[in-house]
Image 1 (tube, rainbow, N blue to C red):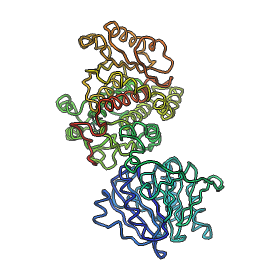
Image 2: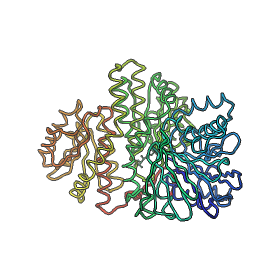
Image 3: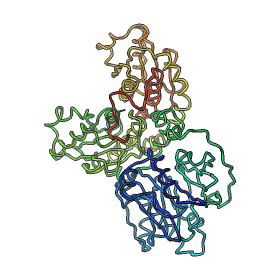
Length: 609
Ligand code: AGP
């Protein structure tokens, strides 16, 4: 998730306007930044790795000449955060500049084709192919308009994009286009703008036009024109007035980043379904060949590892050890060796306990694999193979979208290992593949249908002194994660257990009205979970169950229930069942007057603020 911005002014320099707008988009990505403007037929570019203020101090992002320009603040997905990979990207002759937010899935093929036709690509990014496709269009049909050349170029792209381009061939225009990644036009007296979302526009204008998927927009200082990419037909859309404050806009209208990031999960789950096959296959090969696999992480990432251990076992018949990183050396230090494979999971890629375990294992010649959300993080640099999960920056300290994305990637890995081991039939592969693809939609349904209900339940239990979270099978990981969220942002003491463990002591806590949250997918554990509910009810507990839609058997047994769409595959269930628990923790924190984004005593592994 990056931030793009374009400005076509009647008067004055565009650079300071672009710089200020990128600052308002910095929450979308902050590892490199760049701008390009055109003045007197010449293209000017300034870009480098680092945060906007650092790059501005070195390169001065305000003094590029020209009243038209584009800018970008980056969250690296393809290619480490280095100057060469920073946007804007140029064509061979330095006459076309492009900024992009999204993932071009077929960039490797396009790059190969362009290089075969003599183009020289400088960066490791997917984006750069767009600048060269535009150049190619001009080379092949010099009399074609800039807009039409861009239109032909984006037609060749597969994946998500919001892209803006300028060219010295038509120096008074910005051409931008959208497929999935957000793009908004700003209409103002002094000019026209395009941006990844409204925060960048608000101080300039509150008159905005949303660009829909499959649309291209030609901007100048006088006007904007929308076309359908498919057939170049013109689209007429009137600007609407936004009533957001700039501060509100950065959170996208949500009161907190945590709630915004919970609502982003349909999109971030979709991104995990677009990861580069090559790296998923490579990692699956290492896992399939491994003599022993340790899944090492901390906190929420450890809960993803715990769930993954069920996925690898149930799908691929592969035994794995989920290990809390801070205990890894003590618990397994001596047994880890050249035949060991460590799959380290860390959204930040910088958590010291996880890196310490990894370093020790590396010293003992173990193979290190990494799953992270941050390109160029330390974990990526110490891993033999790593996967970047594409969740975009997570500003809220409480991990939400990165957890469900980790689970989706780990499930895809387990499925690939299962296929290699011939442990799943083609029908099972197809079924699970179809279920995975349906996850973004199902997550949307959970959020839309359950949020109001969660608010009521949070209100009902706001003064609870403690909670017990129970789950069986893979739902044990869901219960653990629900508990962690409630503790870290609402400060409610909570215990989580595999439900079968409760009768071995912790049930002693349960008394009339004691809140028990139980995770109940319709899987092999369903019957035994009903037994656990009865145990709790027999002691007067107040039971909140997360169930599959239409599970009347459990709904009539419990005090409150939250529903997820039916038919979720067992090994994928934590991805949906955790969402109501994320919302419960969020609304409990709000009910109890705490700031969910800035929980006490905690910080995000990567310090952005
Ligand atoms: C989760 O909400 C917490 N922020 C924390 O437990 C976190 O999961 C843990 O510190 C691991 O972070 P990582 O994924 O960046 O390594």
